[in-house]
Length: 488
Image (cartoon, rainbow, N blue to C red):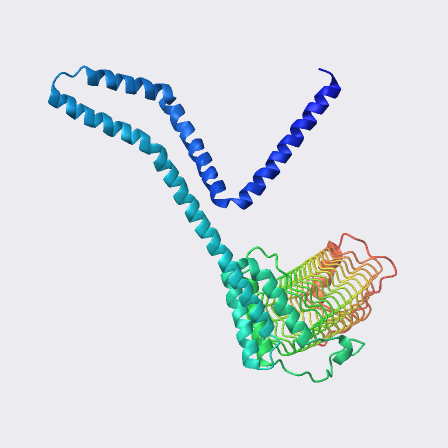
């Protein structure tokens, strides 16, 4: 057979198969009952085939029947013959009834499946009608009807998880439409929140809607549904223990909001206004807070590990006991901020303004403080081991009993700083300015002091010789160690 002939045969078979399949589908649409019966018969044959294969098939049935008839004819007693005849008829009846029993079972299964499908379709139709009605009522003039609509959507979202995403999106869009916000509305261009313009408190129905959004977000166990409330006025919102992970709250107005113990990990709060908001004990790990305005904000005990706070304004904020490990605070504003007991290990505070800040007892090991302003800051008992402070301003700062072991203080301004009982062992003090600093009781073992300015420092005479003798790095000739008289 030539290749051309093969191609023609294949084409003909394809045309026949496609045509017959199209005709079969049309027949199914026209005669659903007949198609259902055919399907049931197919299911019976599929089920009957393995049974016959396991029992030996029709040959076994024929052989058994012939054997039974032969035994029947061999019976001579009339009474016994009648009894055997009855048993033979019963056996044959059971054999004939078996296929019909399978057909009945298949039909029962088919009917149950259809009922289930019809129930699901009816429930979905009802859900769609309820959804449409509730969405329509969200825009009603009466506040009670709007609140009822929001609660109806919450109940629908809990009962039908497949509608959860759409309901959250609808509720977020409703709030964004009712409470739009832009920085020009009340925020100064400079980003300062020292005298914010008054905002209108949230209406009762909007507050309820926001609480519902949080509750429905908690039902998102896969974390795939996003809460989008960017550029929204959420002034004084109450979101205590709210679930808002990965929410988009960029450029939102959250002034005086209560978000204590809220879950906001990986949330987007870029350029958001959080003036005097309550975020105590909230979870903001890996959240984006760059350029956010957090002045006067309560962040006590808050988890900000890995968060991005670059350029954020945290002046006057309370961060005592907060976790800022691995956080980015590049060029952040933190003057007069309470950071006592804060964990800042591995954080990046390069260029940050920490003047007058309270960092007593803060954990700042391996922290990047290059170029940071720490003038007059309180760093008593702070842990700054292996921290990098090149070019930082620590003039007038208090570092009493601080741990600066192995820290890089090259070129740092420590003039008039209080370093009494501080541990500066193995620290790099090359070209650092310690003029007028208080070094009484400080440990300088193995510190690198090449070019260090020590004019007017207050030092303990009993410890100076020990520190000088134990120093590995030799002091250059231009170092001035002019000890001031001890007034203590």
